[in-house]
Image 1 (cartoon, rainbow, N blue to C red):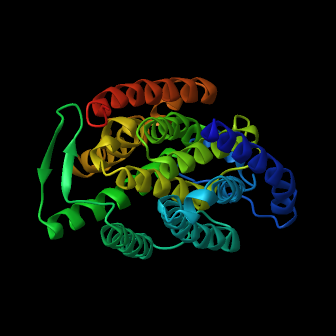
Image 2: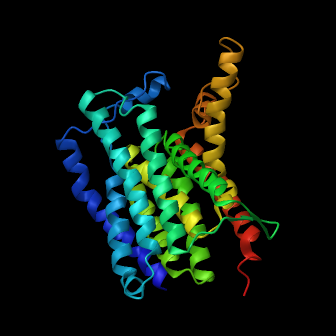
Length: 328
């Protein structure tokens, strides 16, 4: 019941913040600049307000602080660590969005600047979890019910790059109306179930708040989008999902629950590599993957529905894959 209330509170707070934030973004002319190398029909979206991720960041924060207060008093700050970690990535995204809005083009921070900032945030978060004793170098293997013990140095390098990779994969997925937020709803629900069933209350509270915040944001972000989450929202979202996996001490679960993010990223990598190897040939009509299906004639609504269904199916399978670990 507590997680349901958290979800509803986050949903309501996000929706209310959106009523205030959306007109403010319009007044500030914080419009999105559309990539010139993207689908031509996306140019009509130019000027749609961006940085809308501030809506669910605010809603999630309010719900987490209110519903997680008793846990904080008891000394469990895991939900606060996840929130702060996501907020750091959200700040990196905000700086990127601000540069884009200021320069009126789809270029913000350089790739190197973003990578270094993200890597530093990831390492700091992992060191904090280790210090708190909530993270071990035992790499749990879902579906097999076993763990591989790694040296801390190896685990730290592995974990840092998993976090940075996850954050940027979510960012790549945020390419059409409602896609990143919709495919992330089953992911948030997965971690909420994990928290509720297996005595990780604060993790569950955060996941429930994330679920409610995304649903509240979809009021404004579903096609035709009135606002985009921007890098502010997508980096925050990616950071939270990665942090939830590590706070649950099972980072490899990101493979099934993040299957859509992975496919989107791989399509981009494969396209670029093949283009360079063949001096101009392409495997996909356009990368990342959602643009390929757009070029095949899929509507944005169909794309979101199919990708979200895939995400939901794999999240259900992931739950089966970790059930034995947490059996009571």
